[in-house]
Amino acid sequence: MLNNRAEVTPDDEIDLIEVIQGLWLQKWLILAIVMLFSLVGGAYALISKPVYEAKAFVIPPTQKDIANFNYGRIKASELAPYSVKNVYDVFLRNLQAESLRRSFFEKYYLPSLNEADRGGSKDSLYARFSNDLTIAPADKNNPDRLSVAMQSNDSTKAVEWVRAYVDMARVLAVEEMVDSVNREAEVRARNLTQQISVLRENGEKTRQDLISQLREALRVAEAIGLEKPPIISGNLSGEVSANMDGELTYMRGSKALLAEIKNLEERKVGDPFIKNLRALQVKLAFYKDLSVSPNDVAVFRIDGPIQIPDKPIKPKKVLILAVSILLGGVIGIFVAIFRTLHRRSRELRSI
Image (cartoon, rainbow, N blue to C red):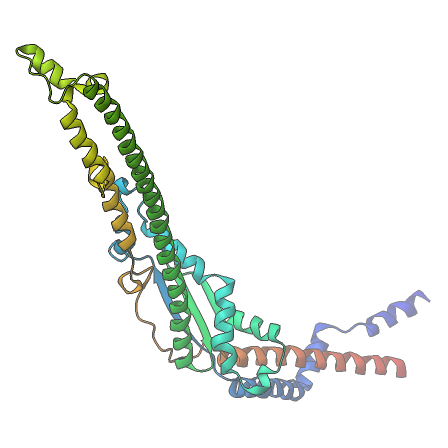
């Protein structure tokens, strides 16, 4: 009984030589499957629309490019100047903003699709658009250099879209910077206007107080019959003349006091007599006239030209054909092995 088992066992096993022989006998089947997969892969590579990719490389602006943003921003103006990094960060934030992607999607991407494609899910279309647009660091050693890449079936359109997308980010960044500069100037102008108003109010109160003081001194001078300042000889004359204010104001005499009171009451413009007012008015005029033209500034630079791609990045025909041949060979071998095992099983059952 043991001997019978020993004799049956080798018949249930298939050695490597038998498998190779089975594959060789079915070589035409394997070749046919490989050819079938090759044809399918080749057809896919041929009928697939070519995809082109256009790239733009952006780098920070120069100090000269942002000079107009810093016009008047000095320590004396209490406004800190913008650095190149400050301005470039504003541009990068707008460049990578989701709101810009959505705006570009609505303005450029959707109108470029045919009616059938536009009728599909908007979320799916946006996901496809997001895959076509990539913004990433172009150089690990230089994180400020970014690449903006756009994919399209039309090489010219890919270039146009890259330019349009970068320009939309530029417009938004410049508007944000100009608005920031203008708002800071407006706030500074309001503060100066308030200071000037306070100084004028104080100047008017000071004038009214001075008139009241002079009237008090006039009554004293008239009471003692002093029309003109007394003539005092010697050193005492200088001391008295220098102190004809306050309690000694009446020493000026009634005629001088009346003339001074009349002059103060008839004064129409008090600005020339207010200390520090003119300096504030000069600053106010500067901030009111301060404006930045978007055409005189730059928030980034394009590093090199945006070239029209002459070679599609997809489909990769050689790779598709190689994968098709490999996949066809693997599946063909598995089919041949399966047939060999199936035939072997039938032979064993027939014994």
